[in-house]
Length: 468
Image (cartoon, rainbow, N blue to C red; front, top):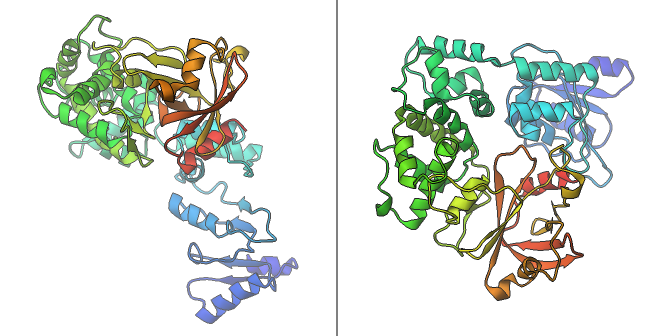
């Protein structure tokens, strides 16, 4: 490559592992002084080299390591007074079938393989401000095909992979994911499948079915968002026992955690009048489901992304700031109801009267068809500490609700904020308690809430991109 560049009139040099130290240092100093324009290297300078003036990266060979890929990008991301951007030209392209493009794009964008495909198809709409990524039509087709075909995608293929692995001995969910390079979302397929169903179809041993086996197996996928140690440890402690917990021996917080576990599992099976005892009895009578939940919860420990904080103002509320919760879990955590199921919460606001707490759950990206023009409230992060939120369109500043928002500190009530990026996200990120800062207008009121815990940097970047 260096020879071809020089033949084209571009000053370039090449260094690699066998190049003498003096030659390496000279190449870097010449590049920094712009005596040459390009340095080509192999297995060098992935990290630990700081040349702020570098403003272009040419990626000419693949790496399947997300960490190494980010380190390589870092060579061009140093700030410099005369540098306004860094251009990355990725020439890896059509390398080999087993190369995993979702690892490369996942390192940059995060999310599941399905979410990556959606971003690629949409032209990367959620990049932070100032960033741009572009794939030409052919490259986009190659990348999307690779993402969809590099792992078993159809149900039959997943079953065959598990059957093949099972010939060598017992297979856990963790082992299956590692060997097949699948994700948990691939196994649960949007709540339509389960690990137990996969095992059964592959001819692997499962426990005897209970009376609602299919429904409860598929309900396991409703826990994929659980991402705090308190829930994961407590749920696993409950499920390790062959018998359902005795509710009257549990603390109030433990009882609420138990309901947060049971309710999403039995919500579509039991009636609204069923007791928590009945819900526990039903879940624990499905031993294969309990075994699956234990395997799943073990894996979820590795998916915790943020430092989380207890909700100190409510000793009995088992929520952690910067963890994710469904509406059902939020209500159960605040002690709304006592049965095995939780009454539906359809709107974005809920006044938890017993706890004297306003629960505000909002979606940032309202471009989907699920939101009409009259409900596309402008909710966004102004900064890491300040949230702009719009009330329901009927709320006036002098109404009881409007006055409660404005005077909640003096009146002794609290405000809790929960946000999600898109409407199809099952769970909301708990932003924590918030304090009224001010508002503009009414019907709706445009309220500014100050958070007690600053947003994590990556969350703020996503929130800002969603409404840009």
